[in-house]
Length: 225
Length: 293
Image 1 (cartoon, one colour):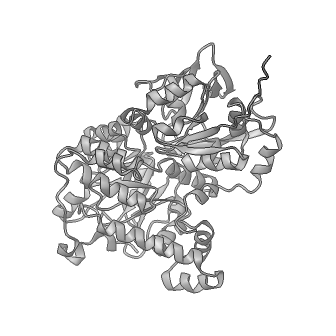
Image 2 (tube, helix red, strand yellow; image 1 turned 30 degrees about the horizontal axis):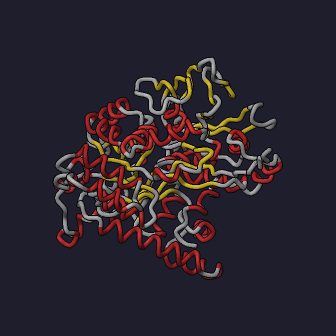
């Protein structure tokens, strides 16, 4: 008879550090007390249990993923069990179909339309209940956001807005067309941490919100100490 | 512009971090820029080196040209208004582009006042040579700053000077006791409340890109290593021998700015860069960075 010791492996959540809202996600993970790191080189992916692809410009991110052969690296680690969350541009990269363009990673059965609301003048904030994620109202920021137009049968819709889907998931992938990293709310980061198998105390979420400011990310991008 | 709108505008600039914003003069160039991985395009009739060569008064571009570019790409479209020309800014807002650059590359329309940017919903980026200039523009409502550099020269020396100046002044403010901030702010023309903000944050309170004279992948990586959040490349791409290739190379070098091996790979086989201009050879009245204050 052998004794199996279940070894607790904390694992790390990575934020893809090529372009876009990298610091903002890192700051949220730090606030939640989750182990995190920036991910840029092939070797950075080895110990990840989760990867966040941040908002930015999806055409730029797609080009960089292709040039630097990171697409296959991400797919490899996804098949190993790494969960992935894409916000805004990140959601576009994960989609099976992009309206009017070639898709990139194709890991979730959704059709998504880039920049679907108009110009920056049409960017907006709102709030909604997302029961699967939190029992409190969640602030939502849409910046030149895409719309998820449809989702396949193995995709769970987390938030349906007027004529589009704003958040959805399957077993390994979470997508949001809005930017939880630009608000003080940690609910989606906590939800992703749980999806990655991390053990998270609920009280972390509300405790983290109080002293957050929209410049909080800047402590990770200072010129002077 | 209410506080919420301003925040959204600052946040759009945050999403551009680590990226390259490219000057384009037509739909074809805009598509090349987007395909190369630009995070935004600056639509204008002539790139700065042509404006410099042609002389005369440089104004806002033809709205029809800007509209065509806007239709052709999905990335954000920026366009330039003359310093102080708030009606050009009104037109650009009515065109519903994504960002206005109140730019010294165009001939200033007002030598005393910059645009009151708080009156607009659309975001503005403004040029600055030092901390005081940056904070004055932010006080007027700018949601993003760029160093001025010296546009259209292919010479990065002024961009470096402006970034180093800004960084030095940020370090000074961050490290001085708070009672010294009043005097420093007075002497250097810093709005006091924003000077305190810089002291607290240890950086500008909005995103700061480098601009003005960047022509190579190494130039872009240099500015990134000096601490800017992203880069503008104007004449440097479409005045070079192989714009598409150079555009891609600068995008790569900006993303991997701290990885010499990758910047090296990006720098190989690009063909001729744009012809450069020695700053001391430019007649003083043609120095663009001196426009605005």
